[in-house]
Structure formats: C-alpha cells, structure tokens
Amino acid sequence: MVCSFYINKVKLIEEYLVILDLDGLTKNHLNKFETSVLKKFLCYVQQAIPLKVKGIHCLNNKSLCDDIMALIKPFIRTQIVSKVHVQNDVHDLLKNVPMKCLPVEYGGTVKCKVLHEKTKKKLSDKIPFFKEEEKQIVNENKRIGPPKVTEDDFIDLFYCNKCILTIIIFS
Image 1 (cartoon, one colour):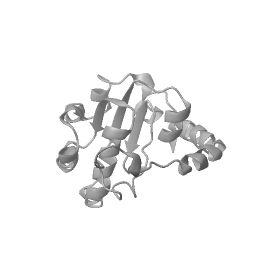
Image 2 (tube, rainbow, N blue to C red):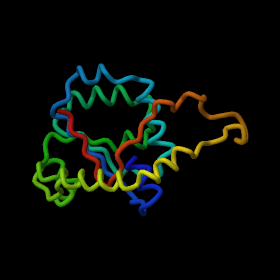
Image 3 (cartoon, rainbow, N blue to C red):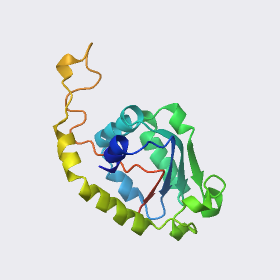
C-alpha cells in the first residue's frame, strides 16, 4: 500500500537503497519461503515497480546471505546481483550509506517508530484512494500479442514497502 500510494501521489525518488539486517534470521526462516511467491515478488520488483535500486546491503550474517543469494539468484537479473553487498557490521555499512540515513538503533538519526506511525496515519487517511485503486484492473483481452504471464501469476502478490531506505530487520 505504501508503494502504491507513493507511486501515485508523491514524487518518485530516483534511486533506492535496501538494507537487510539479517541478525535474527535463521535457516528455519529460509525454509518458510515459498518459491512461487518469491518468484512473483521478484518479478514485480524488477518489471513492474518504477524504481531503480542503487544497492542492496546485507548486514550481520554472511553465511545466511550466501544461502539467500543461492535461493533468489535464478529469479533476479545479473545487474541486481552485482548490486548486492555483504557487510559484517554497521561500520562497514557506513562506507556506502550516510550516517544521517540510518536508524537511531544503528547510530543514525532516523526514528523508525515515529516514521512508522506517520506512514500508518497517511495510509489510513487515504482509504478512499485505495478503494478506488482496487477497482482498476487490466483487461488482458486488449493486450496485443500473447500474455507475458499466466492469469494466476499475481494472485497472492504483495506490495513491498517503498521508501528511500528500506530496512528489514529479522528478529
């Protein structure tokens, strides 16, 4: 919903930086990934969402990052694979990310809880927008040429959180 809202209502940011804090992630979490959902999500991110990924930084768990890359590598473009960087700690991350863009928990200035509450408020204020958006569907019969995906490819597709810096913390 956040992604959809910002794409339609706010000026798009030219580049995005994703930081994955893998500190609490275990192999058991990886076993719960459904390959079909992962494939659909990565297809959506690479082909449908109008954003340019500047970099993806995996933090705090190199061995698990290697397992994640093995899992997703068949579904992502080589240009994106080259943008994945593994960092051992926050100090390594600071070589690529300004301190002011990091959350307070990492020594930065971004207050994630405050940002989260503001975003929830914005979304709840825009319920009519989302109800109208749900009515907008594609008529595949009008598409020229064969369909590029099957009808049920995106039934369970979910939206990712879109912001300048997306931090996903596994705990």
